[in-house]
Image (cartoon, rainbow, N blue to C red; front, side):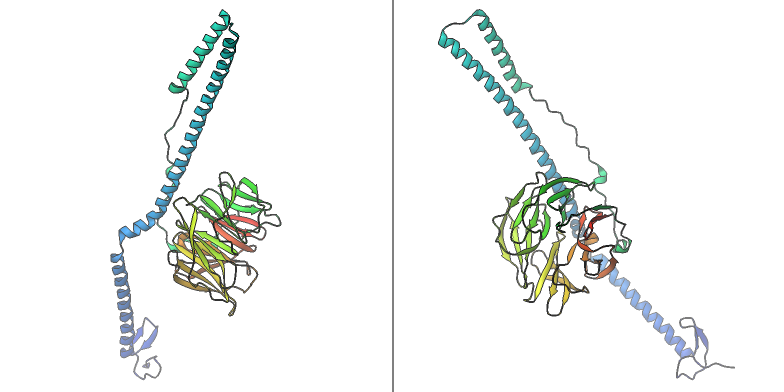
Length: 433
């Protein structure tokens, strides 16, 4: 017995099984299904052609130059380390020669004084003359030695470890927060410790009450110094002035990682500050107030802070900046709105502070504690949500890639080097590979 077409309201006889919908249909609907597939194929061909055209228009030199910026930064920092080491050894050499000359001057002075006494008394023995000659000969030999061969300098060729730099292609899909490794190290934080932290490629600066502590690459505390100032709101690192920058409620402090000396900055206007971040040219500071503003400060050629100015309108009067942070290319800002109880992440230009994109974050409203974020892999961003105990992975294009429930309350996050994630949490500072 003949079947009618399986398409509703079609009374034609079914002529074939459509492999697309797995139904017996008439010739007309079979052709329609086929035409639909062909049209989809044409659209896919158009998409491929668009991708091909896009690939053809990519400026290879510009793309490579953008990637080379990181290599160039490494080169500059490496040269800087060599220059600093050279300067240190020059100072060591200068001091060695100066100390030796001072020693010889003292011996000559003692000899002159003794000989003057003999002249004054107008009496001297052959033995004393002989001893004077020996001393003078010795001094002459010592002084000649200073000019010729007193200092011995031993050097070895600088051998580069080629594993210092690895270059490989990365796909955005490779980075998945859901496969974050377990915590492999915890540094305890006593009561009264502040959660802010920052790192460079060498050290991580944390507050472990009552001290500031530098954590080295082995995740051991290498240096510490008493912190006797106010509450620490934020910390960042400046490669330009080679210092950590600490914000308390009203002041900026510079911390030298070599000496651990803490210097209060006197040239910055005293305001209620909350957050800070650095690019190569600028220091950015946000204010701790509703209707927050951002102050942009130039690093001068003398590596000092100068020429500060306020940003154009970033926040409305009912809005508040929780955190500003940068990846040296873009500025990320978390802003809360008190009227509609929303929290958003904005990406802005470092030069103009123009908004590139914004993302509403579905975070619980809490006016008492700011949320925190940091640059993550592949120019992405990582947000610490202390309210629900989660980490949010945000792509560089402003999309939520993944949300990871964390095993404790995360307050602050930062990257230490290229492959260590540091989480300042309720029960201590956690380290993940």
